[in-house]
Length: 241
Image (cartoon, rainbow, N blue to C red; front, side):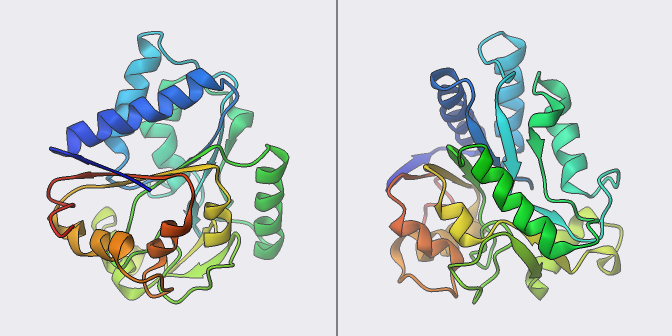
C-alpha cells in the first residue's frame, strides 16, 4: 500500500492525472476503470489539458465506469454517462466504442450485469481503477454489509448515500434509490487501484479504510489486501492517520 499525502485538492488532482497519464503513455491500449462525483473532476480536467497539449493519446484506451443509476437514461443530466461525456469524454480523442458504462435502463438487469463483467474480461481486465470513497466507506456503490465476493450487480442504495447524492438533484424524491455497480470482487481484480480523497469530512473513513480492521461494514477496508493500491489524500483527509 502506498499513501501519498498532498497539500490540497488541486495537488491531489494533478498527481492523480500524472499517474493515469503515465499508465497510458507506458501502455497506450490501457483499460481504465473510472469514477464519477466531485472528487475526480480535477483529475479529468488535468487529463484533458494533457491531451490538448499533445502529451496523452486516448485513441486506444478503453474505459469501464464503476456504476450508473438504475432507471436513468444516459441523456439524463444526472446520469453518470452524461457526467462522463460533459466532464471528460467529449474533450478528448477516445473512441465511442471504447467507452463502457452499465445501462441504467436495461430491461434485464441480471443479463446486463453478466455482460458488463464479460466485457471487462474480453478487454483483458482493468489496468488501473480510479476510486473515490463515500462517507460510509462505500467504493463504487458497494454499500456496507455487501458481500466482498460480489461482482457487477444491482444495488439498493444506503439512505445516507441517497441523501449525500441529493445535492445533485432538485429534490430528495428525484434521487434514484438503486444503481448498477461493479462489485468488490470486480474492483479488486484490477491490476492497480488509485483511491482519491479530499477534505476533513473524509478523515474518519480514510482512517478506518487504511488502519481499521477489514470488515464489510467499511467496504473500502478490503483494499488493504490489494497488492497495488495507492491512496492520494490531502492533509485534511489524512488528519486522523
